[in-house]
Length: 302
Image (cartoon, rainbow, N blue to C red):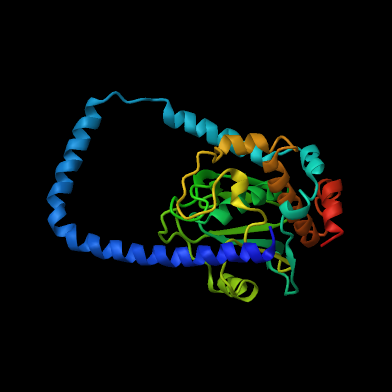
């Protein structure tokens, strides 16, 4: 996809987000007007729901099954074999090529003596939703995640309900770098986390348009939107368009194991670009990762 077309999609997303913000404000005003008269009705409904729920049998399996599913997906996306990543290389070419990171020149971004990778995005954002898959694969080559949770992007934004994960309440451990994720809003546009003044200043400097996701790799490389389209994950361009072709989290994880799948070509190609950039700020460590053929090949071009 060309830069001009990508920019058009991003501009459309910004306009739609503004319309959604206005609609949310109108909805909030409407709710405040009817809140007083609706209190009694709400109480009655709650009591009825409690009674009905108490009378129903309580299934014991769905939550446990979901937890097992999440654990399996998390394991698969954080342990993609090096052979698969090498087979994908830099990803597809031509119109489907992943967008490379942008080289910048700034003072080293570090925390505690280790280079920092800063991510600022939002759970509602479908472009963030796409990028998180690649980021998770790449970062897992330098450390380990815990507490990853799976979700979908907004049901009213472009590429509605893009399957994804969230970095909110996750932890990341690495002896090579520090990862700082900031998820600013939930899937329903509620405030979640706020970047610090310093983090916001970095984003303002290198991403003046304010598009999500924003990623700063040690102040040497940036990402200012997804490296590939959310439609790779089966969703459709258009505000709030439900897509029967949207992949499940398990399907995405499974596709990442197959280097010939369109999902792997895009996600793992993007992950190799991110990996090569991180290797630049870790001085080529760990060698087992930074010396991989695909990483070396991408690294020579950035």
